Length: 243
Image: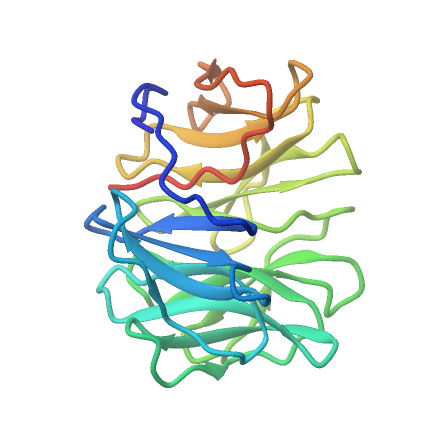
């Protein structure tokens, strides 16, 4: 859909789950996970839903693909052999390989310059937000919060990350600096999930249950200007902003 909520259209029609969409930096290609072959694989397709291409083949259950800004690499999460780890592969699906050890590393996100990957992990006990170098080295923990969520999003200048945390059915959206300082809570109640920063840095889109059904909202990076974009009888999830 358009950034103001208009022009909504369905572009997949599989008899299987298709989710975790993300847009390429040029806004022309969508990367997503689907179970259409019986296991979750990574796919790409044009913005109109055409030219679908399966990029992976039975290396695990794969989630949350995201293309780097230079268009060269895809980062994703792989659930295999009882643990979930972060993987990277070429944009055409070649050379898939693990860059983390798990056991529960989820929802990776490229930094703007492609040098860092943010992800959530329970490696120190409860799930928290981490950042590592693009080759998997230099891992550092950014948060120490109860009930950390999963998906995060970098600000366009690379200085901050938006994420969600909190108890079940009462998650809130937070922003933190990339060095782990300056934590700010942006929402207060309503089960808020999956933030994604707009390319101009002026908005954060997210999912919220505050009106009794999961809908897509936007707000300013300081938590003001909250606006609902969707109004549907079924739940809307996992917005990812395109350029």
